Image (cartoon, rainbow, N blue to C red; front, top):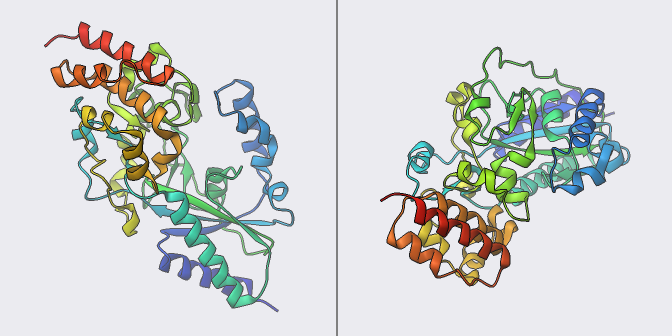
Length: 352
């Protein structure tokens, strides 16, 4: 007979050896989170993320995704790149491009998936065959709710998971399993009366505590949104060309954030503080060569160019910025052309 308590202790040790900051075990019942999800979808807050609607309650019922599932192993891995240029410094210089700090290194999907698969394989070697499925972000799983129930932290008012000992700069991954491992105590909430994240959002996307309108969120607009960025939100995007960290940057719990230990989280291609006009001049071939193996690669060259055009429209007026935009006034993409035209109008109106 398998000693499940001993198995759980061994899993925790092995998870840390594989680079995870913490591992916990959650059940599969999420009635309140499911109601929150359905209400969020009914309000249309998911925008163009139509897959959220398609998956429906599968996202809150892991046993539908992987039949036989009775537990969710939730693990977190720190990503904050300690050697990167200070986030506040880059945001304060509108001629530079800001990339969300989670995307400065290699694609986290691959890093976490490989580590979780290795953990499952080691468990297989320890106890023999068992049922499992590894999930990292792309599968329809309410990962933050499971991580909370696994004791890894609590969901903050900005809707990100926060850990008392590690802040919020970490990735989450799951192993859905049929092993009835002992459950952990859910994480307690510790935001208290703090609402620092809400006014910090440049586009006012946090419409109420614990409620995010993705249609206004810069991370959504620069990554998931495929069409034109709403004109009324472009100025607020500033120099953020891929994602946004503002709600986390002001969170007091991130004074406990840990620097990433995994070598693949290190900054690549100078993306911690690139010059806007320089990255806008990348050809499609250069984008694909440099961003292959990065989470950024998924948005493609067209959306990458669209995002930078908006940032150039918000940048200080300069000959180089205007010239970079002029060079792509007749871009082959109608989407890029429209954003370039807007940016050129902005450049003409700004002083300097």
